[in-house]
Length: 308
Image (cartoon, rainbow, N blue to C red; front, side, top):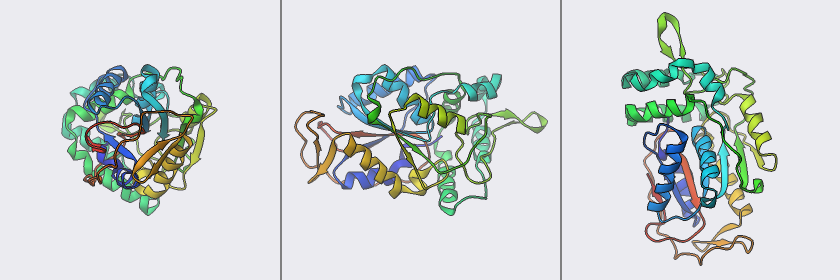
């Protein structure tokens, strides 16, 4: 349940080096299919024919769906603490998933805030959680319900035709060996019949079960796997330099290099001539977790960076 500003560190750092970066925050959608259509329209509005996509958590799940449905618009994928199916979450939620849209907004916000762990983690991970929690109030009830519905409705990613050498899996350092499939957006019925969300592991591990991590690696055996030193669900906030470094490594492997404020594609990845030097990016105001950040390596008209 985050906003586009969750990636403000990466937007600033990469834009300063000459990359064109967008951090996209999406409105409420009822299904991954609808989300993909909306994101396709977003790229049209940005005059962007194809892009390198970064997705975290639910955002990583959704960009995989997009790569399946619009393969011509995806040049590479970076998946941070992501997963390829919501089936375990849907099984755990059961019929409660249908109640998300009729749950009062204050209650939705409360159960999300109550789900964040309060101790037993690195200071940086705790600060990242505090930052995300402080931004939950900026999301309307429809957006919060949509995030919960997308995460608790059974769906699996189909076959991604993208060359797996152009996929990087970023995983936080954690020892979550839970088989339950709990996540931030997986509610359960607590004491006195109250709708609640499970808490994270006591050591600040991610809310993505280890089984789903293994499944993602098996789905993309040819992908690069980057094991981060940072822990927690939001390494792009708790350890931004480390995540930015891995993004740059990924982009270089995909043949995209910033040079004098321009992106220079490798001979193996032909694209139109590079655009003029981009204007400096404006720092986005600090907000919350999993949205999707987009890196482009083709010229276009208009602003060189954008945050939605």
